[in-house]
Each structure stands twice: as C-alpha cells, then as structure tokens.
Length: 134
Length: 87
Image (tube, rainbow over all chains, first blue to last red; front, side, top):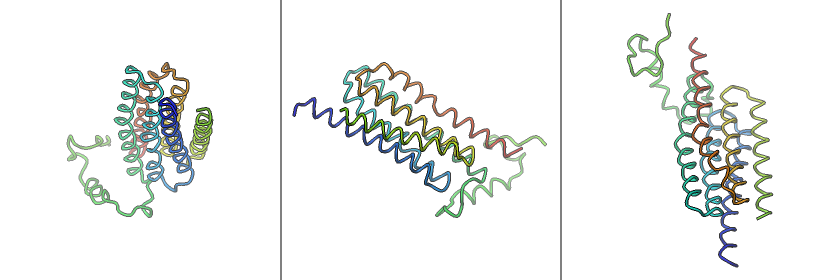
C-alpha cells in the first residue's frame, strides 16, 4: 500500500466520521425532547464534524494556501458557533421555553429572580436590555 | 474513495432531511433557528467534502464567508424573540 493510499484512507475515515456526526445531529434534532438538548446535539456538526471534514480535506488538498484557508474556516466557525448558541439559549431561557423538569440543576434561576426584582431605572448601564418605555 | 463519497453523500442527505423535518415541525421559532444552523453546518460540511473528493479548492473561500457570517441569522432572530416577549 503506497503512502498516497494510506493518506486517502485516513482522509476517508475522517470525512465519514464527520458525516456521521452530522447524521447524529439530525437524529437528535428529531428525537430530543426540548430546545436545550437539541442545541447540545446541534453543536456536533458545527464544530467537530466540520473540523473532521476539513482535516480530510487538508489531507487530500495538501497545498499551503488551501490549508491556510481551511484553518481560517475552522477558526471562524469555532469563534462564531458559541455566540449563536449563547444567544439562542439566552432567548429560550428568558422566554420560558426551557423545560425545567428536564434540568438537573438550574444555577441561573436565583440570580435571574434577583435581577428581575431590581427596579428598571436602577439597572444602570450593565443591564442586558434597556428598560421598556412606559 | 468512491465508496466513501457515496457513504458521505447518503449520510449528509439523511441529516439534511431530518433537519428539514424539524424546521417544518417547529414547534417554536428557536427550534427552527437551531435546525437552520445545523442545516447550514451540514451544507458547509458537504461543500468541504466536495472540495476534498475533487481535489478542487475553488469553493473554499465561500466556506470562509459562510463560517464567518453564518451566526448572524441566529443572533438576530434570538434578539427578536427576546424583544417580542418584553412588549
């Protein structure tokens, strides 16, 4: 077996694993009961699936310019996926769309109650949202 | 490599189909947003797989743009949902 054949086999294994993670996310989106667990499964193809696929891609296309582009893709994806997940989870929690019977612990709840007890005009510049005009 | 290409195509198509079912069924806007993000990630994965199998890096700059800007949709809709509840 030549070196090229070994590299192709490694690339194929990486890429099939990445595709399997995408399939796992699809199954989880259908089967999981609430939004937070679906978000947990949804991060798999966004991060590890894409990284494995780019690894296979970098093995197949082994030029410096293209590997640099793939590193950029991986970096941007790693930087932006948590932002989207954080914003969606925050909106879901504030909107009451999380199922509290499925949570083992909810460390945010006491702090959130303290936050909401404070009058709107005293929230100051660190408030997440400006108080609504009455 | 042909076997791997067919396997990856089947897996990614099945993942896209299940994600589309979740987008149609909902039940909430945020569920659809999470499913749309997954659909975008699977699309990026598929384009990367295509580039790998053809050894053709033409589509890679597209992936840079998508991975850099793909999160703006989820963030803006999440903000909209929060604002909607305050009113």
